[in-house]
Amino acid sequence: ALREAIIGVDFVKMDIEGNEAKAICSISSSDWGDLEMMLEVGSEKNAIEIFEHTQQIGLNVFTQQKGWTKAETLSDIPTSYYEGSLFLTKKPLIFWG
Image (cartoon, helix red, strand yellow):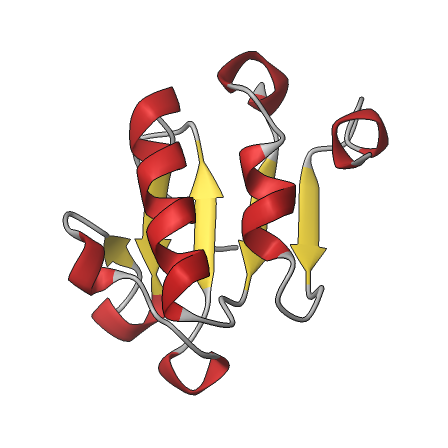
């Protein structure tokens, strides 16, 4: 129950070996608040599910393979760790440091 585990949390680094779509899709827009998350995507199926869910709930997705710019299309989402990580946030920009 990821939804329960993120209460009061502001950052999650998630590596759950192929279960990332199930976890992300269990979290609603109101659950995100100040939460930000870094994760790898393990498959094309998971990439599709994550992209569709984040679009539905208004979550911003930034992708390492595009120099940490915002993912605009499904093709921007990595389908394996070889292609880099994702950063999810409700904020319009990401701030490092």
